Image (tube, rainbow, N blue to C red; front, side, top):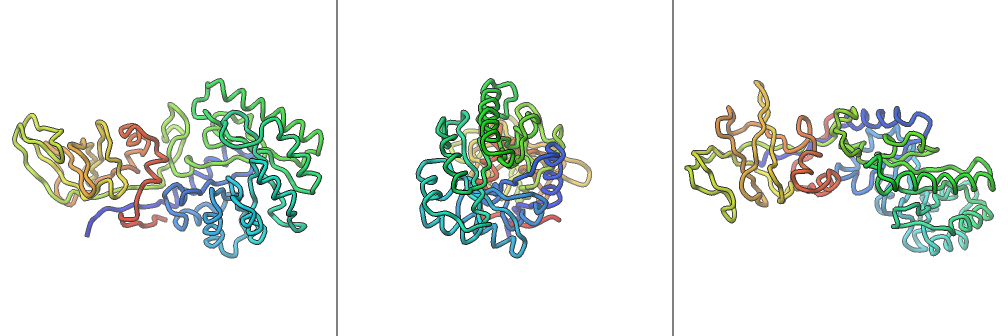
Length: 367
């Protein structure tokens, strides 16, 4: 059996949600669980996130899966990209999903096919493009709001930061001002029942004055840092995913010998190589630069550099002069080795690491 595991720590998820709630004590919290809970697994994560006020997903299929797992528990589920066709609009009503509306076509469906009185789908998350320039209404957002209000819809104005991880980026202040200006107009026209939602994980931490009624937390839930220049320890976040394996073989090299495909790494002295039963077929990034793993033993923990090209099923580490051997546990990312570190070595972000893990590693829950 390959001793490669992905463990999901439900206590860490609950802890991270509590941290977010402390950052935004006056706002409702939407837990973003799209992309199979950022690769962590919906079924593993949702039970630990039931204190969230709503769940955010990217697609109708994801919404159905969340609804199925929640069972009899009544949880608000929001389709963050809205529905993709008219049939989905009707299906959203059937299941009581709430929808973002970000374009004229979606607006037309909502205006032409009204929801039953009291339906959760009667709450519209109206997307305003404040600077991300991806989805959302521009200056016509006020017209869209008027049409929806006239039809009896409840409105939540929503937008998305482009650069919230960089607290001092000038786009942030511009987006906050644009959002506040439109939200103020809407409240003046249609009453204070109009709500607002602007902040993602980074915005929650960096811009407490912009929390409004709803905050939306994604990456912070899973124990990676959303803020440039801050690590998870500073933010009091715990890694929810532990990706681990074992040393399953040891190979002795002479000086001048190479390791793995292409012979791109050469030993400059007698070297002891540990072979791990994990590779890009499990979701570890093939491209890396000066990456390390953490070997944990009862008497301590040791960082070991990855050497040679990572293969589909294996990778090699330099364990010369380390008191380690076959069977010792190796942390690829998680406790003691944050995914953010691995992401930097792979020139990517922790989001991608999590989402690219495959079904091959044995998955288990830590309560």
